[in-house]
Image (cartoon, rainbow, N blue to C red; front, side, top):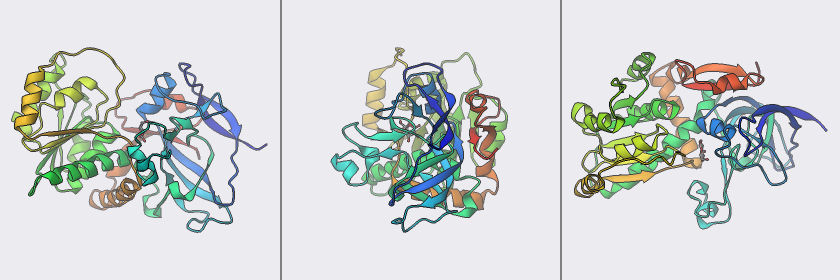
Length: 366
Ligand code: BGC
Protein backbone atom coordinates (compact mmCIF):
# COMPACT_ATOMS: atom_id res chain seq x y z
CA UNK A 1 0.00 0.00 0.00
CA UNK A 2 1.29 3.46 -0.92
CA UNK A 3 1.43 5.86 1.97
CA UNK A 4 1.63 9.63 2.35
CA UNK A 5 2.55 12.11 5.05
CA UNK A 6 -0.42 13.58 6.90
CA UNK A 7 -1.11 15.50 10.09
CA UNK A 8 -3.67 13.70 12.22
CA UNK A 9 -5.21 13.83 15.68
CA UNK A 10 -6.87 11.25 17.88
CA UNK A 11 -10.16 13.05 18.57
CA UNK A 12 -10.78 13.43 22.28
CA UNK A 13 -7.07 13.25 23.12
CA UNK A 14 -5.38 16.57 23.92
CA UNK A 15 -2.29 17.63 21.93
CA UNK A 16 -2.45 14.50 19.83
CA UNK A 17 -1.67 16.16 16.47
CA UNK A 18 1.27 14.39 14.84
CA UNK A 19 2.67 13.48 11.44
CA UNK A 20 1.56 10.01 10.37
CA UNK A 21 1.97 7.76 7.36
CA UNK A 22 -1.57 7.44 6.06
CA UNK A 23 -2.80 5.32 3.16
CA UNK A 24 -2.57 7.29 -0.08
CA UNK A 25 -6.11 7.52 -1.49
CA UNK A 26 -6.86 6.25 -5.00
CA UNK A 27 -9.53 7.93 -7.11
CA UNK A 28 -12.34 6.01 -8.73
CA UNK A 29 -13.46 6.73 -12.30
CA UNK A 30 -15.57 9.73 -11.27
CA UNK A 31 -13.06 11.26 -8.85
CA UNK A 32 -10.05 13.56 -8.90
CA UNK A 33 -6.69 13.03 -7.19
CA UNK A 34 -5.29 16.31 -5.88
CA UNK A 35 -1.75 16.97 -4.68
CA UNK A 36 -1.70 19.50 -1.86
CA UNK A 37 0.47 22.60 -2.18
CA UNK A 38 -0.39 24.24 1.11
CA UNK A 39 -2.95 24.21 3.89
CA UNK A 40 -3.83 27.13 6.17
CA UNK A 41 -3.83 26.65 9.91
CA UNK A 42 -7.10 27.80 11.45
CA UNK A 43 -8.26 28.26 15.05
CA UNK A 44 -10.53 25.27 14.47
CA UNK A 45 -7.47 23.03 13.89
CA UNK A 46 -6.06 24.10 17.23
CA UNK A 47 -9.40 23.49 18.96
CA UNK A 48 -9.43 20.01 17.47
CA UNK A 49 -5.90 19.45 18.78
CA UNK A 50 -7.06 20.65 22.20
CA UNK A 51 -9.79 17.95 21.95
CA UNK A 52 -12.56 20.57 22.11
CA UNK A 53 -13.94 19.67 18.71
CA UNK A 54 -13.42 17.14 15.91
CA UNK A 55 -14.67 13.68 15.01
CA UNK A 56 -12.88 10.84 13.21
CA UNK A 57 -14.44 9.24 10.12
CA UNK A 58 -16.41 6.06 10.75
CA UNK A 59 -14.01 3.13 11.06
CA UNK A 60 -10.98 5.28 11.93
CA UNK A 61 -9.45 6.19 15.28
CA UNK A 62 -7.72 9.23 13.82
CA UNK A 63 -8.74 12.33 11.88
CA UNK A 64 -6.52 13.98 9.29
CA UNK A 65 -7.00 17.67 10.06
CA UNK A 66 -6.83 20.77 7.82
CA UNK A 67 -9.66 22.37 5.85
CA UNK A 68 -8.11 25.54 4.34
CA UNK A 69 -6.73 23.75 1.32
CA UNK A 70 -4.99 24.57 -1.94
CA UNK A 71 -3.57 22.07 -4.40
CA UNK A 72 -3.36 20.96 -8.00
CA UNK A 73 -4.94 18.12 -9.89
CA UNK A 74 -2.56 15.20 -10.29
CA UNK A 75 -4.88 12.72 -11.98
CA UNK A 76 -8.51 12.50 -13.06
CA UNK A 77 -10.68 9.39 -13.30
CA UNK A 78 -11.90 8.33 -16.77
CA UNK A 79 -15.38 9.80 -16.27
CA UNK A 80 -14.24 13.23 -15.03
CA UNK A 81 -14.87 15.95 -17.61
CA UNK A 82 -14.22 19.41 -16.20
CA UNK A 83 -10.81 18.99 -14.59
CA UNK A 84 -7.39 18.16 -15.99
CA UNK A 85 -3.98 17.47 -14.44
CA UNK A 86 -2.27 20.73 -13.50
CA UNK A 87 -5.49 22.64 -12.66
CA UNK A 88 -5.28 24.48 -9.36
CA UNK A 89 -8.19 23.64 -7.07
CA UNK A 90 -9.70 24.30 -3.66
CA UNK A 91 -12.13 21.80 -2.16
CA UNK A 92 -15.22 22.84 -0.24
CA UNK A 93 -15.34 21.72 3.39
CA UNK A 94 -18.84 20.52 4.17
CA UNK A 95 -20.59 17.46 2.72
CA UNK A 96 -24.38 17.16 2.75
CA UNK A 97 -26.75 14.71 4.37
CA UNK A 98 -30.23 14.23 2.91
CA UNK A 99 -32.08 17.13 4.54
CA UNK A 100 -33.98 19.47 2.18
CA UNK A 101 -31.33 22.21 2.40
CA UNK A 102 -28.44 19.87 1.73
CA UNK A 103 -30.32 18.36 -1.20
CA UNK A 104 -30.82 21.88 -2.58
CA UNK A 105 -27.05 22.46 -2.57
CA UNK A 106 -27.04 24.49 0.65
CA UNK A 107 -25.26 22.07 2.95
CA UNK A 108 -24.02 25.11 4.83
CA UNK A 109 -27.66 25.45 5.99
CA UNK A 110 -28.00 21.76 7.01
CA UNK A 111 -30.91 21.47 9.42
CA UNK A 112 -30.16 18.09 11.00
CA UNK A 113 -26.55 18.63 12.04
CA UNK A 114 -25.71 15.33 10.35
CA UNK A 115 -23.47 16.93 7.73
CA UNK A 116 -19.79 16.02 7.67
CA UNK A 117 -16.85 18.41 7.27
CA UNK A 118 -13.47 17.51 5.85
CA UNK A 119 -10.78 17.83 8.49
CA UNK A 120 -13.33 18.63 11.20
CA UNK A 121 -16.28 16.29 11.52
CA UNK A 122 -16.39 12.71 10.30
CA UNK A 123 -14.17 13.09 7.20
CA UNK A 124 -10.45 13.30 6.70
CA UNK A 125 -9.13 16.74 5.86
CA UNK A 126 -6.43 18.10 3.62
CA UNK A 127 -3.27 18.30 5.71
CA UNK A 128 -1.84 15.42 3.73
CA UNK A 129 0.16 15.06 0.55
CA UNK A 130 -2.87 13.96 -1.47
CA UNK A 131 -6.64 13.82 -1.28
CA UNK A 132 -9.36 12.43 -3.49
CA UNK A 133 -12.56 14.33 -4.19
CA UNK A 134 -15.65 14.31 -6.33
CA UNK A 135 -15.56 17.18 -8.89
CA UNK A 136 -18.79 18.63 -7.52
CA UNK A 137 -16.92 19.83 -4.42
CA UNK A 138 -13.93 21.29 -6.24
CA UNK A 139 -13.48 24.91 -7.24
CA UNK A 140 -11.08 25.73 -10.06
CA UNK A 141 -8.59 28.47 -9.21
CA UNK A 142 -7.10 30.62 -11.98
CA UNK A 143 -3.29 30.44 -12.19
CA UNK A 144 -3.14 34.16 -11.35
CA UNK A 145 -4.51 33.34 -7.89
CA UNK A 146 -2.17 30.47 -7.08
CA UNK A 147 -0.28 32.44 -4.41
CA UNK A 148 -3.48 33.36 -2.55
CA UNK A 149 -5.75 30.38 -3.29
CA UNK A 150 -5.15 29.05 0.23
CA UNK A 151 -7.06 32.10 1.54
CA UNK A 152 -10.20 31.14 -0.36
CA UNK A 153 -11.76 28.90 2.29
CA UNK A 154 -11.54 31.47 5.12
CA UNK A 155 -12.69 34.12 2.67
CA UNK A 156 -15.83 32.08 1.94
CA UNK A 157 -16.86 32.35 5.59
CA UNK A 158 -16.85 36.13 5.08
CA UNK A 159 -18.57 35.90 1.70
CA UNK A 160 -21.44 33.88 3.09
CA UNK A 161 -21.93 36.23 6.06
CA UNK A 162 -21.96 39.26 3.79
CA UNK A 163 -24.19 37.62 1.18
CA UNK A 164 -26.71 36.76 3.91
CA UNK A 165 -26.49 40.23 5.47
CA UNK A 166 -27.31 41.82 2.14
CA UNK A 167 -30.23 39.40 1.64
CA UNK A 168 -31.54 40.23 5.11
CA UNK A 169 -31.16 43.95 4.47
CA UNK A 170 -33.39 43.62 1.44
CA UNK A 171 -36.08 44.05 4.09
CA UNK A 172 -35.36 47.77 3.74
CA UNK A 173 -36.47 49.27 0.44
CA UNK A 174 -33.57 51.61 0.01
CA UNK A 175 -30.72 50.27 2.14
CA UNK A 176 -27.56 52.12 1.31
CA UNK A 177 -24.86 51.01 3.72
CA UNK A 178 -22.01 53.47 4.20
CA UNK A 179 -19.96 52.20 7.07
CA UNK A 180 -18.81 48.73 8.14
CA UNK A 181 -17.24 47.72 11.43
CA UNK A 182 -15.14 44.59 11.46
CA UNK A 183 -14.50 43.27 14.96
CA UNK A 184 -11.42 41.04 15.06
CA UNK A 185 -8.18 41.38 13.11
CA UNK A 186 -7.45 37.73 12.31
CA UNK A 187 -7.75 36.34 8.76
CA UNK A 188 -11.57 36.46 8.80
CA UNK A 189 -11.56 40.06 10.02
CA UNK A 190 -8.98 41.29 7.51
CA UNK A 191 -10.57 39.41 4.61
CA UNK A 192 -13.91 40.84 5.75
CA UNK A 193 -12.43 44.33 5.61
CA UNK A 194 -11.16 43.62 2.09
CA UNK A 195 -14.67 42.65 0.97
CA UNK A 196 -16.44 45.62 2.59
CA UNK A 197 -13.84 47.93 1.02
CA UNK A 198 -14.43 46.26 -2.35
CA UNK A 199 -18.13 46.95 -1.82
CA UNK A 200 -17.28 50.62 -1.36
CA UNK A 201 -17.98 50.87 2.38
CA UNK A 202 -15.93 52.97 4.75
CA UNK A 203 -14.42 50.34 6.99
CA UNK A 204 -13.23 50.35 10.58
CA UNK A 205 -11.41 47.33 11.99
CA UNK A 206 -11.37 46.96 15.77
CA UNK A 207 -9.54 44.38 17.86
CA UNK A 208 -7.63 43.96 21.08
CA UNK A 209 -4.41 43.31 19.13
CA UNK A 210 -2.02 46.25 19.59
CA UNK A 211 0.60 45.02 17.09
CA UNK A 212 1.50 48.23 15.17
CA UNK A 213 1.75 46.27 11.93
CA UNK A 214 -2.03 45.99 11.88
CA UNK A 215 -2.47 49.75 11.51
CA UNK A 216 -0.48 49.64 8.27
CA UNK A 217 -2.01 46.40 7.05
CA UNK A 218 -5.50 47.84 7.45
CA UNK A 219 -4.58 51.31 6.13
CA UNK A 220 -3.21 49.69 2.96
CA UNK A 221 -6.77 48.92 1.83
CA UNK A 222 -8.09 52.31 2.89
CA UNK A 223 -9.63 51.15 6.17
CA UNK A 224 -8.98 52.41 9.71
CA UNK A 225 -7.60 50.28 12.51
CA UNK A 226 -8.74 50.90 16.07
CA UNK A 227 -6.92 48.80 18.68
CA UNK A 228 -8.22 48.30 22.19
CA UNK A 229 -5.59 50.47 23.79
CA UNK A 230 -6.88 50.45 27.31
CA UNK A 231 -5.70 47.06 28.53
CA UNK A 232 -7.60 47.31 31.79
CA UNK A 233 -10.91 48.60 30.50
CA UNK A 234 -13.83 46.24 30.08
CA UNK A 235 -14.14 45.20 26.44
CA UNK A 236 -17.87 45.77 26.63
CA UNK A 237 -17.36 49.45 27.57
CA UNK A 238 -14.68 49.97 25.00
CA UNK A 239 -16.83 48.52 22.25
CA UNK A 240 -19.74 50.59 23.54
CA UNK A 241 -17.82 53.78 22.76
CA UNK A 242 -17.17 52.90 19.11
CA UNK A 243 -20.43 54.17 17.56
CA UNK A 244 -19.76 57.64 18.92
CA UNK A 245 -16.11 57.79 17.88
CA UNK A 246 -16.34 55.91 14.57
CA UNK A 247 -19.98 55.05 13.76
CA UNK A 248 -22.79 54.72 12.95
CA UNK A 249 -22.27 51.19 11.61
CA UNK A 250 -24.64 49.86 8.96
CA UNK A 251 -22.98 46.47 8.92
CA UNK A 252 -20.89 44.71 11.57
CA UNK A 253 -18.94 41.49 11.14
CA UNK A 254 -17.88 39.89 14.43
CA UNK A 255 -14.98 37.44 14.17
CA UNK A 256 -13.00 37.61 17.42
CA UNK A 257 -13.75 34.16 18.81
CA UNK A 258 -14.95 35.80 22.03
CA UNK A 259 -18.55 35.36 23.15
CA UNK A 260 -18.28 38.46 25.35
CA UNK A 261 -17.42 40.54 22.33
CA UNK A 262 -20.14 38.87 20.26
CA UNK A 263 -22.77 39.83 22.85
CA UNK A 264 -21.35 43.34 23.29
CA UNK A 265 -21.46 43.93 19.54
CA UNK A 266 -25.26 43.51 19.59
CA UNK A 267 -25.39 46.84 21.41
CA UNK A 268 -23.53 48.92 18.83
CA UNK A 269 -25.35 48.28 15.56
CA UNK A 270 -26.53 51.41 13.77
CA UNK A 271 -30.25 52.01 13.24
CA UNK A 272 -31.58 49.60 10.55
CA UNK A 273 -28.16 47.90 10.53
CA UNK A 274 -27.17 44.24 10.59
CA UNK A 275 -24.69 42.28 12.69
CA UNK A 276 -23.23 39.00 11.45
CA UNK A 277 -21.74 36.73 14.12
CA UNK A 278 -19.10 34.23 12.95
CA UNK A 279 -17.17 33.31 16.12
CA UNK A 280 -17.30 29.67 17.13
CA UNK A 281 -16.99 29.90 20.90
CA UNK A 282 -16.66 27.28 23.59
CA UNK A 283 -16.48 28.95 26.99
CA UNK A 284 -19.37 28.79 29.42
CA UNK A 285 -18.21 31.78 31.45
CA UNK A 286 -21.09 33.93 32.66
CA UNK A 287 -21.29 37.58 31.66
CA UNK A 288 -23.22 40.51 33.04
CA UNK A 289 -25.42 42.17 30.48
CA UNK A 290 -28.36 44.55 30.52
CA UNK A 291 -30.96 42.46 28.65
CA UNK A 292 -33.43 45.32 28.57
CA UNK A 293 -30.89 47.67 26.97
CA UNK A 294 -29.99 45.13 24.30
CA UNK A 295 -33.58 44.23 23.57
CA UNK A 296 -34.95 47.74 23.35
CA UNK A 297 -32.05 48.81 21.15
CA UNK A 298 -32.68 45.96 18.72
CA UNK A 299 -36.43 46.55 18.61
CA UNK A 300 -36.53 50.33 18.38
CA UNK A 301 -33.68 50.47 15.88
CA UNK A 302 -34.92 47.70 13.57
CA UNK A 303 -31.54 46.07 14.07
CA UNK A 304 -30.83 42.56 12.74
CA UNK A 305 -28.49 40.01 14.36
CA UNK A 306 -27.70 36.66 12.78
CA UNK A 307 -25.14 33.89 12.93
CA UNK A 308 -23.33 32.41 9.96
CA UNK A 309 -21.18 29.31 9.52
CA UNK A 310 -19.49 27.56 6.62
CA UNK A 311 -20.25 28.49 3.00
CA UNK A 312 -21.61 27.06 -0.20
CA UNK A 313 -20.56 27.09 -3.84
CA UNK A 314 -21.88 30.61 -4.45
CA UNK A 315 -19.54 31.90 -1.75
CA UNK A 316 -16.53 30.07 -3.16
CA UNK A 317 -17.27 31.56 -6.58
CA UNK A 318 -17.68 35.06 -5.14
CA UNK A 319 -14.48 34.51 -3.14
CA UNK A 320 -12.53 33.76 -6.33
CA UNK A 321 -13.86 36.99 -7.88
CA UNK A 322 -13.02 39.02 -4.78
CA UNK A 323 -9.50 37.61 -4.48
CA UNK A 324 -8.90 38.64 -8.08
CA UNK A 325 -10.41 42.09 -7.44
CA UNK A 326 -8.36 42.47 -4.25
CA UNK A 327 -5.11 41.68 -6.06
CA UNK A 328 -5.94 44.09 -8.82
CA UNK A 329 -6.89 46.96 -6.51
CA UNK A 330 -4.21 46.44 -3.84
CA UNK A 331 -1.39 44.47 -5.50
CA UNK A 332 0.46 42.35 -2.97
CA UNK A 333 -2.03 42.90 -0.17
CA UNK A 334 -3.91 39.58 -0.17
CA UNK A 335 -0.54 37.76 -0.38
CA UNK A 336 0.73 39.76 2.60
CA UNK A 337 -1.88 38.06 4.81
CA UNK A 338 0.15 34.85 4.53
CA UNK A 339 2.68 35.82 7.15
CA UNK A 340 4.47 32.55 7.90
CA UNK A 341 5.14 29.19 6.24
CA UNK A 342 6.11 25.99 8.00
CA UNK A 343 6.98 22.54 6.70
CA UNK A 344 4.75 19.56 7.45
CA UNK A 345 7.25 18.26 10.01
CA UNK A 346 7.19 21.63 11.82
CA UNK A 347 3.39 22.04 11.69
CA UNK A 348 3.34 22.54 15.47
CA UNK A 349 5.40 25.75 15.12
CA UNK A 350 2.51 27.00 13.06
CA UNK A 351 0.11 26.38 15.96
CA UNK A 352 2.01 28.95 18.07
CA UNK A 353 0.92 32.57 17.73
CA UNK A 354 3.83 34.86 16.89
CA UNK A 355 3.81 38.66 16.61
CA UNK A 356 2.70 39.77 13.16
CA UNK A 357 0.95 36.47 12.38
CA UNK A 358 -2.18 36.63 10.29
CA UNK A 359 -2.32 33.38 8.33
CA UNK A 360 0.25 30.66 8.89
CA UNK A 361 0.33 27.91 6.26
CA UNK A 362 1.79 24.42 6.11
CA UNK A 363 3.75 24.12 2.89
CA UNK A 364 3.85 20.65 1.34
CA UNK A 365 6.52 21.47 -1.21
CA UNK A 366 9.05 22.82 1.35
C1 BGC B 1 -14.61 26.33 8.90
C2 BGC B 1 -16.02 26.08 8.41
C3 BGC B 1 -16.73 25.10 9.32
C4 BGC B 1 -16.67 25.60 10.75
C5 BGC B 1 -17.39 24.71 11.74
C6 BGC B 1 -14.63 26.72 10.37
O1 BGC B 1 -13.31 26.83 10.84
O2 BGC B 1 -14.01 27.36 8.16
O3 BGC B 1 -15.96 25.58 7.11
O4 BGC B 1 -18.05 24.96 8.92
O5 BGC B 1 -15.31 25.75 11.14
O6 BGC B 1 -16.91 23.42 11.83
